Image (cartoon, rainbow, N blue to C red):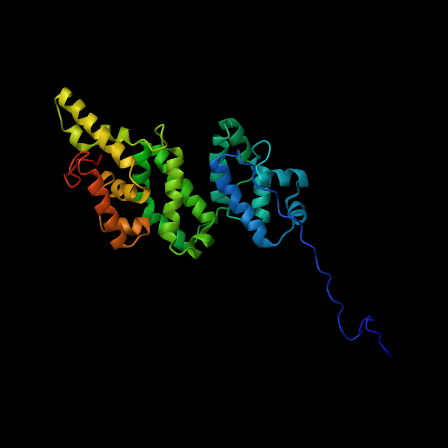
Amino acid sequence: MTLSPTSPNPEEPAARPVRRRGRPPEAIEPQIGPTHRAWLEPVRTRLFASGLTLDELVGRSGYSKTRISELLRGKGYYPGWAITYSVVRALDIPVRPMRRLWTSAAHEAHKSSGWIENRVDDARPPDSELPPVAHRGFTEAMAHPYTAYAHAFLQSEQRARTTVGEVFDILWLTWDQAVAAPDTRRHAWHLLRARVLHRAHRRPDGRPDLRAAAFATEAQARIHDLGERFAHIERFTRFFDAVAALPEDQRDVVVLRYLCGIDQHAVPGVLGLSPAITHTLDHHARGALELQGPHLDEPGATTP
């Protein structure tokens, strides 16, 4: 039997047809809140990495293409948990951190507690779900310095813990990216700083407002004369204003070491910087602040 160039060879299996992939979702709507974006971006990243088309994701989720497309863009109303959960399970994304971030973003979108509670009961995360061991070790090591840093800007223990919890949940969702970064600690620190500064009060010029910290130092608490205490607070208010005006990395060193009381040898590990770079940042910051307020090494001068 003679085969033409286009005839199939009966001894060879037929080639599999090439499957055309669907177009990726359109860009995220610019007006969505930062916590909504914080969980939506990892979902989109996981979808792109999975190789699934939008039609295939729709088939797995059980929801219409229009609704899934809107969810992936952050378009329209904030999505309910049931449809979000369907996408999370279809893409094999950790449910627990997603559920917490979805809840925070719902509050951010001004959804009522009743609306949220009625929807999160639709689908609960599996009891056996745990973060990677390395992630657990990281959160245990960083929980205290991260929370202290957040508290310095937010002046609320609850807001600080909530913000740090969101950071750890985002890291859980994106842990592969975090460990692939040149320095996981530096990657995580940038995430923390962005989340904290988003929630911090700001001055008209855009600087974070640290002045409230002047009311919480040990030094002012030891002053019994009211007039002297007010004078002390006024002086420290100017000092903390100067701290807020420092370049970001210098400000981070000052806040961690002198406002939060983190040991100087631990600060480089928290920031994800070398000891030499951290020392240089500290040196320049102290030089900029030396005429603005208290001696930074004075016990209790700047710590709460």
